[in-house]
Length: 110
Image 1 (tube, one colour):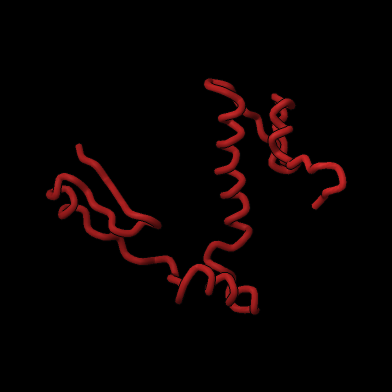
Image 2 (cartoon, one colour):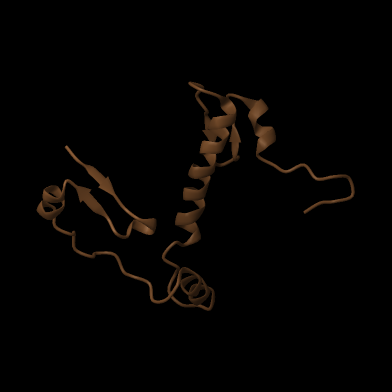
């Protein structure tokens, strides 16, 4: 038994104890790597280059999943949140849906 740690964005991973780290070789790089920064990758895609490595078809559903965790906090401990991804709403606890949209002051809108 051991512990696996890593830094930001998956860099600098280590396994403890050290014997476990040495016994597990680095996997081969199979995914393409971006050149430059995340922002440069995004702008290159906007200018007609290859799709960004975290394109919206991947990043959008991922962000939805992560933010759904915030809704689960509002639901409470041991409560099941049933989510309609197409309608972007909670179907079994409609009272939670008020947290999904911003209410603007009168005279203001987006």
